[in-house]
Image (cartoon, rainbow, N blue to C red):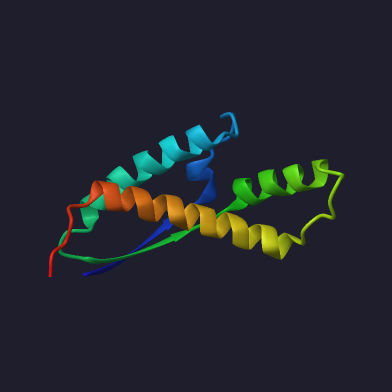
Length: 100
């Protein structure tokens, strides 16, 4: 069966939680542990949002006055890549190694 999982950015950085890399990684681990349960025997596609992450990066970007700010589309691409990397790494940790 083909399954699409949509993981919102708010699942990775929760409201009221400190906006830290450690909290985000903890939440990615929790989400991936659940998503890994549906992978065996299925084709799984994982999509994800990045709202809180891009907002945080935009605030950090604006706070650094020594350099010109990056446009929002580039900040969005940076956070999408970061989240994809975190999910891929953790799914690799959760799932057994496949051999051909």
